[in-house]
Image (cartoon, rainbow, N blue to C red; front, side, top):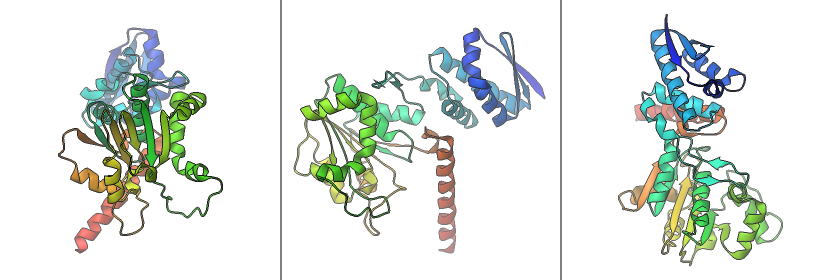
Length: 326
């Protein structure tokens, strides 16, 4: 057993570090099986040498984020611990990124993981960006935030959001109402992100002016999209023909972001995913970049990370069994 002392400059730092009901410190204690006690301006960590060293690195990293104005949460505390466990604690300072957008409620939108930061940087730098990864990694939400930022800065004149109208493994039958009512259920996640960024009234105003368009992928055929920020969501459910049709809509002074999760393809059996084809075919073209997310980039409930890891582990075991039999 060893003891390591970390000095804290201000009481506000300690309050932010410990969190509500000491929840942040309890997470660290449970992860590394150490004891952490605050006495005045000193934080004492006691436990096995390796675990104390890792806990100290996590706390130093969290204090660095606090000093940069970042608010700690369960998610970023766990993410810091995962980076320390992987030996990547030197990259934690990169998490204190600039705000990319302010929501209608005044909440800043910032990348919360290194993968998300890389994704936002790729969108800013490239004309076409593919965001591929599991649910909850912020692919769509951050893309909408980047689109709203570009629109507010008058870099583009329109935001166009689209996705293929493919049912997720179940038949919904005929939906009531006019055409817009029929496609709205498929586009709901896009509406939710826009409402959050702009507010319902502002969103409606821009829709009426033609500055914002949310439509099924089929509506894109035959168009040339200039001065636009175009987002294709759930792209794993496009066919190769649909993907080629969409990509060739790109006009002057426009950006495209294509997001999808290749583990959740809802196409009929035997139909290839246009997203998988596009990532492979376009990987060496300048101005096009693919960002791949993993379970550590998930920013939803902690259980979502565990679910994704469990499914990935099961898939790897099944693949290994298949290869062994072969």
